Length: 333
Image 1 (cartoon, rainbow, N blue to C red):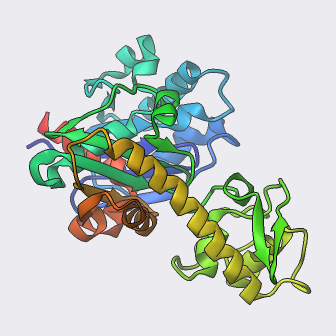
Image 2 (cartoon, one colour; image 1 turned 90 degrees about the vertical axis):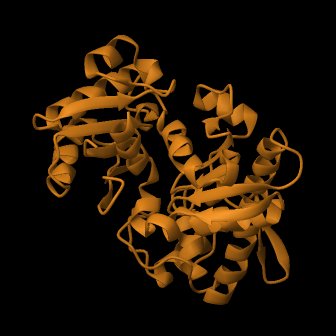
């Protein structure tokens, strides 16, 4: 079998994996520095296994540094070609086919937001009978993908389609602003409206709740992800500060945010699962928010078995699941 390396070019992260032993994710704010994308990809590829073939997928074309998604796909494809160092490059498309860069330039929308489709095809191998749902919760979004007999079972072809169908929830485990999830927070026996400002994100919530360790990920104010700084950011969400908002206040607020987020994701899971076979279905969970995906499935009550990609392949593989997926799919094609 030909060995491929997979890369997933997102708007906030670059992920690379070989579907076997290697997986790595690095933050990259594409919307801030699109001119540095090729260099960032090249740097990431230097740390990866040396192979002759590169399979790519993307979601970064939605970044608002691009006037259109077509322009984004073309720019990302150009950068992949520049950074590729002579490897054969194939880009995964929404119809399940891999295309050459020059073909992608002609029909760019086929390559737009294609990573969820590759992930579902890859993860379906872990579903008993090949039918169920794949729930991937990443740093920014949650994908709920129906699979029937090993095939992606949706008519959605764009992210707008998927939002309408409940198959995409724009809520994740790190980058989602709190004011996009809740309109109020509990505070010392009261319910306080939140400010509509990017003061805190879900990364602050899950750091305070102790479900993620301190990282170098970007924060709303640019400061560290220490619990102290997370509490500061959560305080500002209700226009308070550390003199009037304690760790106990932050924990209470964080539980409220988590529950609200879980309810939104679980509603989407129910909406998607209802179109599958009657009764409970198996599910596969993946992504940096895999624990959140599992909790949402539990709340939805639709899964009779939950398979964890991190348990099956390893944590880094799960975090870079779409990159691993295109590497494996290309190797089998």
